[in-house]
Length: 115
Image (cartoon, rainbow, N blue to C red):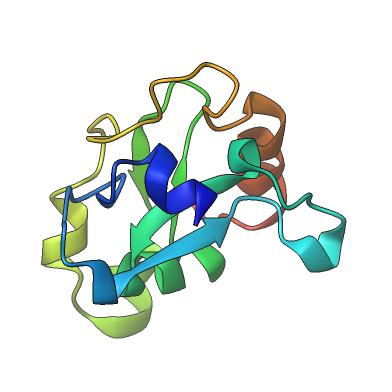
């Protein structure tokens, strides 16, 4: 609930506001000792959350979206997702303490993202 409110009930990437399709995503998974804290979370649309968790997209330290070329290689598609590549997050928390942690974003880029 804290992540949902921090992101003003909007997907950080797409700006989607339909609450039933939005999910709080860990940047560094809890199973990998990522904390349950707002700075380790993003509010994402379900499909974007899945792609983020599987490493097909990531957020760099300057809060720009990177979409892996592997989507096209692995699935022969991804046009909708490539439209986000290089863009800055649409929605971010107002509080600097709730902003995505650079440390956790770096971890995701180094350990999850398949570039």
